[in-house]
Amino acid sequence: MTDKLTAYRRADAPLPAVNRLWPLYGAGFDNFGVDDKPITVPMPTYGPDELLVRHDACGHCFSDIKVIHAGQDHPRIHRNMRDKPVVLGHEVSITVVGVGEALRDQYQVGDRFIVQADIFYHGQNCSYGYEIEGGLSEYTVIDQRVLNGDQGNYLIPIQKAETGYAEAALTEPWACVIAAYQLRYRTAPRANGTMWMIGTSDAKTMYSFSQGFDETSHPAKLLLTKVPAGFAVWLRERAARLGVEVVDVPELPDPAAIETDDAPVSPAADSGGSGKGVDDIILLGADPDLIERASPNLASYGVMAIIADAPMSRPVKVDVGRIHYNRWLYVGTCETDIAAAYRDVPTRAALKPGGRAWFVGAGGPMGRMHVQAAIQSATSPAIIVCTDVSDARLDDLHTSFSLEARRKGVTFICLNPTNKDAYAAAMAGFKETGFDDILVLAPVAPVISDAATYLADQGVMNIFAGVPRGQSAEIDLSDAYLKQARVIGHSASTIENMRFMLEQAETGQLSPNRSVAAIGSLEAAYDGLKAVDETCFPGKIVIYPHIKPLPLTALTDLKDMLPTVAAKLKDGREWTTEAEAELLRTML
Image (cartoon, rainbow, N blue to C red; front, side, top):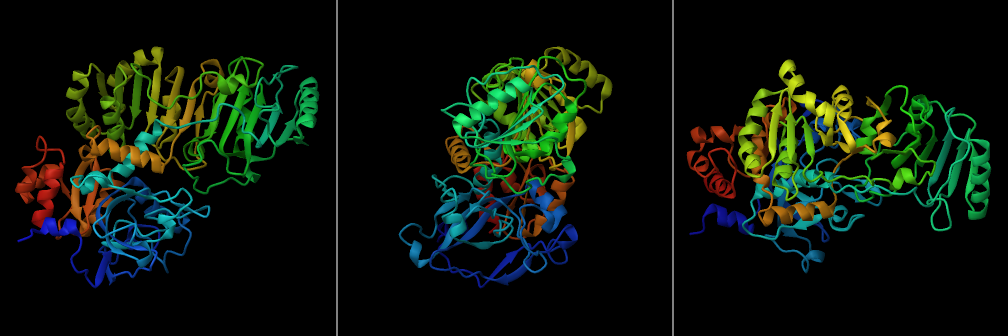
């Protein structure tokens, strides 16, 4: 007799007539579900070039909370949610249960996939769990937006039958972690882009351009504002020879009047431009006021190069939200060769081997992933400092990773900034040495400003947390040219990142299962998202849409509710594929 789990994996049983899902009708938890419960709707139908898929596991993400709070004002939502509600859930593993006639030579029932959620179709963002119905439903239809999008097929096949459902679903957030260390930035001005040259009162009389403004590569348009006369003549002559359009801009516009780009940016376009705004702003001299006035003009993936050799008079209010979402970058040089700002110490995204790394806000789900990845890396830092305002989260982090760090010879330090005296004493030494890498996982501007003061020479601060666009933090941008330090940002992942992370999981090099903190059935999604909003758990919450009703349950509490499942946890606290299999045998 076939057991329930084997039959579930085959996925060939007759389908139900109905589908259950959680609709979000607008901003706020009051608009999530009906009477705080999922609803039942007819089973979706699918066309000849579409797939019907089953959601096997769905991870909760803080990005889901942003949609709940913002409703249809969220930049990834393009419809009236009251009439056409959103179904959240982009961290998913799926199984094909129906194949359209035109796709039967490519797919079959039982095929398993993960989904690269950041989907673009004909230039329009239509992300999974936003515009496309997500994992907080039992079944959904996969159409050509997913199968034939701008970056190809956004489905990534699961290679091994034994790969767990949660393990696969959490590949998506893990891919975002991995992607943070694989960012690529331009090391020259954008070819055929728009360049804006701005002079300051500190500008020198003459500069040079060893690359980026020649026959090999040059902008299509050059804007000039108060550039020193001699250099302006040189630029105009060079532009005329290269066919570059020159536009005089007598004064900087009022930042409040600038139309900024809040649309999601394709993660596949790391070195590209959005076509809206200025690709490269070159500031001749160090003037915080001019930086603040000019920066809003930057395009997505735009670069501001500061050419100066003296410290700025004050920190600069930097839009850290756009560093994160629009991938702005500030570079600089003390030389008069402008190209040196781009090529000197090219921006490093990977953690420095044997260096000093600080994870700010390390106790949450994404922070734990970063810490785990850093410790398990073949080229891990020598010192890892983890800070968080929750002692409970820090204690759990220390319990989870301190022994592993010690075995690798990594100094592992956990600190709570609210314990002011102990924190100040522990961080005093790092104020002198600085950190080679600072990963910011707390979307709080004052925290970002403080962290930036700890950057070492050639240090990199990565704003991983989703700070809202328009939110500024004060940062001493003198470090960009005096120390060659970099402040970079990251959002989402690519199909390649997802494939890489799935391979890491399926070969046992990184375990997404270690991120799981709590589980529940589809009925538990409301409580699960509330728990994410209120930061109740140190790790990820995973929903299993097809099991019998199971309230949101911490792994450590499974011994009381499902003792046979708890018996298969690692060390009584870590999720395993064996525990998942027992859960499904018991609860399907």
